Amino acid sequence: MAAVTIMDHPLIHHKIGIMRRETTSTKEFRDLVTEVAMLICYEATRDLPLTEVEVQTPLVKTKVKEIEGKKLCIVPILRAGLHMADGILKLIPNAKVGHIGLYRDEETLEPVEYFCKLPSDASDREIFVVDPMLATGGSAVAAIDMLKKRGIKKIHFLSLIAAPEGVERLQKAHPDVSIFIGNLDERLNEDSYIIPGLGDAGDRIYGTK
Image 1 (cartoon, rainbow, N blue to C red):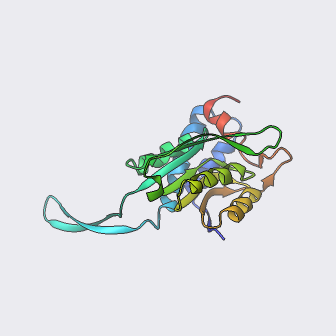
Image 2 (cartoon, rainbow, N blue to C red):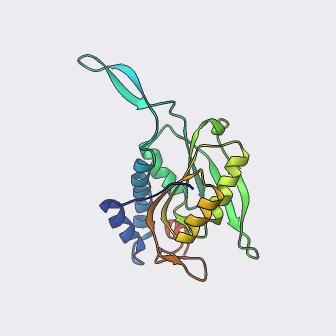
Image 3 (tube, rainbow, N blue to C red):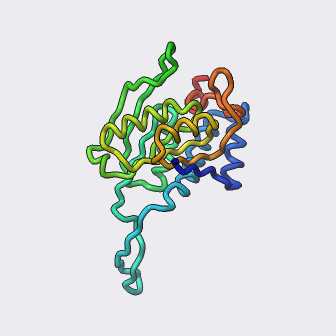
């Protein structure tokens, strides 16, 4: 079963708490998405392999550690995942970026693919799929299905908040994908919104609510 890491850091708790408030402005919400994504990324990249290289300091030559290979790729699920990707790029500016577009079929309520653009060497890279909300898990499972069909094997999933139902569905569908969550909320309501949640992340990021 996939490993699930739930963040337990005062800064993440504090920032998600502000995001939950109905009175938080669009700009502040957007900035917080970026900031919390950076903090989650810090933990999600903890086990990246390192290699030693020799460098010249202003005084002497010395050996330092660098990320081995440096083949990383961030794949936001459109549209809400874009600002999470921006935060991660602040920490890993040389990472490549792919995009996955999904919409929900109004009859089946299942995600339907409408866009997928990945770097040509994506199958050789460590992939970080990002989406602020892991609610039913449908979009996350569909996005990772799309990646695996394209030969990608090293996949991690990052979200700001999640419902237990979504985590369980993602674990069952993709037990090899590590999951990193800012906060695990209580449940889904009858409309599949996370409770207590923070509303529709995409609408709050882009001011379209």
